[in-house]
Image 1 (cartoon, rainbow, N blue to C red):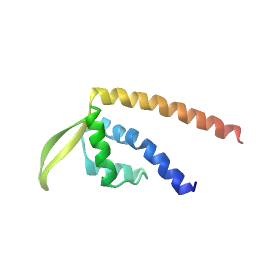
Image 2: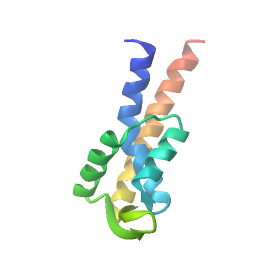
Image 3: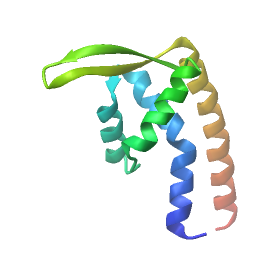
Image 4: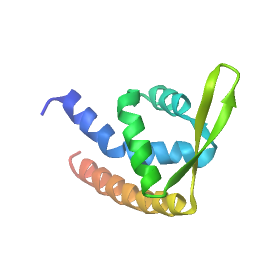
Length: 110
């Protein structure tokens, strides 16, 4: 596996967690989510984010409201639900376990 492919696979695996983290801080519009991911060096396209947002909504982890926009049609703004907050906490526990394990392995290779 190439280094680039490795990075892509890691990002794909963490995308749900990252998107939920962004939404958990404040109500956001899709382009805000994409922009924050890009600023964090997680490059995604709308075609990746929209299906994930729909899946998270079906799972009741997020919800949305339509808001009028001065720049065109109404926009869909996402916010976290109670179930979404619980899910983030579970994902964070998993992330910390994985992070600890990887760091332990890396440390033993020195």
